[in-house]
Length: 274
Image (cartoon, rainbow, N blue to C red; front, side, top):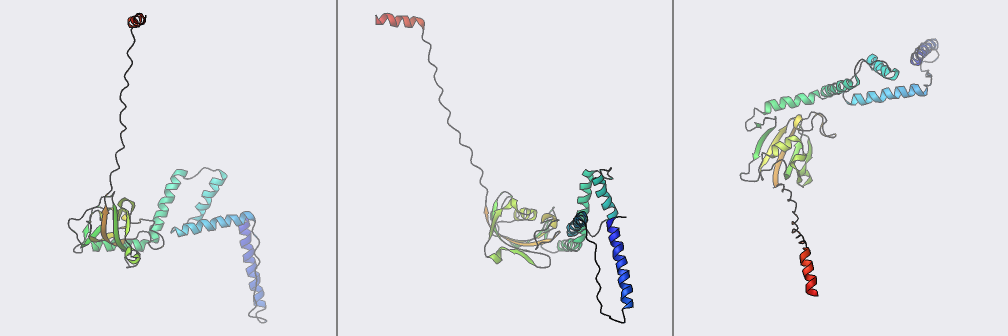
């Protein structure tokens, strides 16, 4: 019998003892308090419990509700004892990732379904356009003839971002200062959507979670699997200038080789000196 089982039995036995004593003394005192002494845990027992506690807290934060504790224990024992594994280590990583993804989806199922239902009905509204990627947008103000950005350009915009419940999670209007950034350094929904705009235009984008902050979300204000709504006003496009061509160093003039002196000419020069 392991130590944990012994502790459990001791607790049960102590409980029965206390209950029996309480019944005998019921007539004397109804408010008598009892205390149960718990056997102190060894360092190994404490560490083992702490490991289990922290692992469970971490998994619970990822949306895991429960595990099969028998197989959890067996997996750990097989590794520590060097026994043959039921699952290859490399495959285990894939299984864990898939399980965590499905668990998190389950945790944020209401957010996911709300986004799907919203986009499904929103695309049927007049004035709402849907791209091949699933991005939806409507034109609030169209500026004809203005410069259109490419993904590599830098843009200056005013914007407001909200969740489907109307909560604003970010706004340059509130900060009273537009934002400037490279269009290829933002979420995919922005990179694609802003390229549809011309300078001076204002659009409203409805961004599925796959084109937004995905399965992770962003901080405390944007939960995972969130469908986002952005109002974007394109103020300026700074076209990326091509990198200057490297300067070509001037070619050095070819050095003329000295003509070989003929032996006869040397003799003649000596005679002339005489």
